[in-house]
Image (cartoon, rainbow, N blue to C red; front, side, top):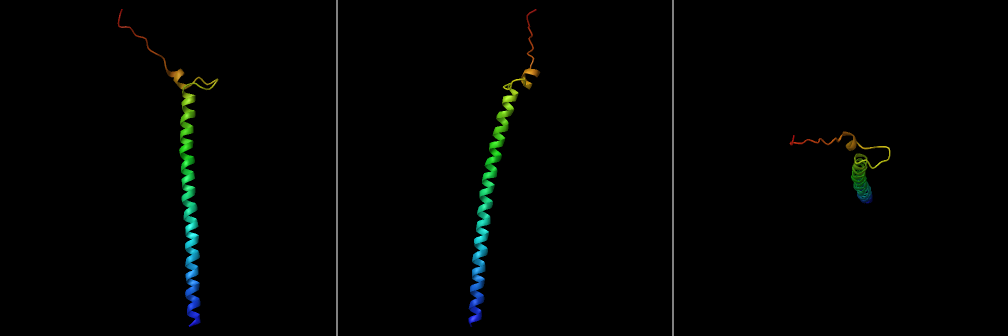
Length: 79
């Protein structure tokens, strides 16, 4: 009779610790996914801003592609 109680208590403690370990792993996984997603969104915003600065010619020595390829065409319908 005593042997059965030891096996049952041992199994219940094992399930308890396995559940605790699974809870810690799940919590860490969710937390890290949140922070990595935040970093990804911030980096996308950062690269958009840097790209616009380069595109608009905001860097010395770099005229920007807009100023290189934009040539206004002046046409007149009056001859």
